[in-house]
Length: 88
Image (cartoon, rainbow, N blue to C red; front, side):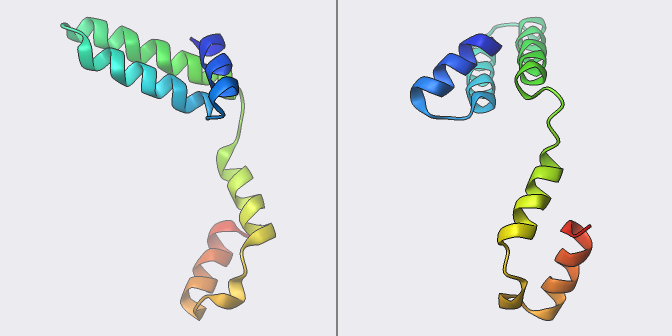
């Protein structure tokens, strides 16, 4: 599933994780038993681990926000909150 998702993501310029989740949702939607559905979601979960590895999305988001978010354009309460939430 991970290899398939990578190929599709490259071809269609979409996130490979989105490909995995979309595929799993569509398969799970069509299955007759809950056992089959659990297998589908377990496979999707393992595929996401392969694709993402040890990715730390919150850290990436915080770094991006620190670089590009203009706090001066926000009200003081929002600035205070974001400084606590994303600033190191």
